Image (cartoon, rainbow, N blue to C red):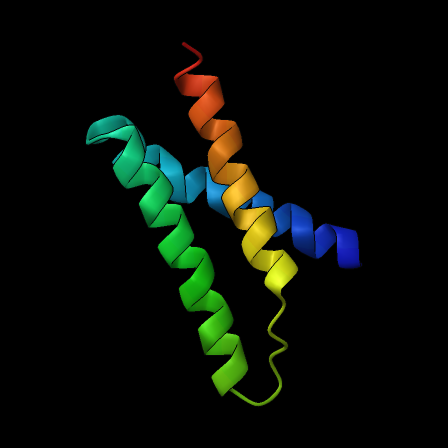
Length: 74
């Protein structure tokens, strides 16, 4: 189950990167994904029943970096 959660965060990072990263600028896409990841974990920390995890931030940003390298390999 733990790995499935990280996979979801990885995919969320890809999605958080794609729209701003492709339509606007890749740097904005990376910033967007990092902001989404951090915001989600802050939300988790402030709400009972949610578990914040720094590794979720890493997984989300890794997804964004994967998308960055996929769309901008040069």
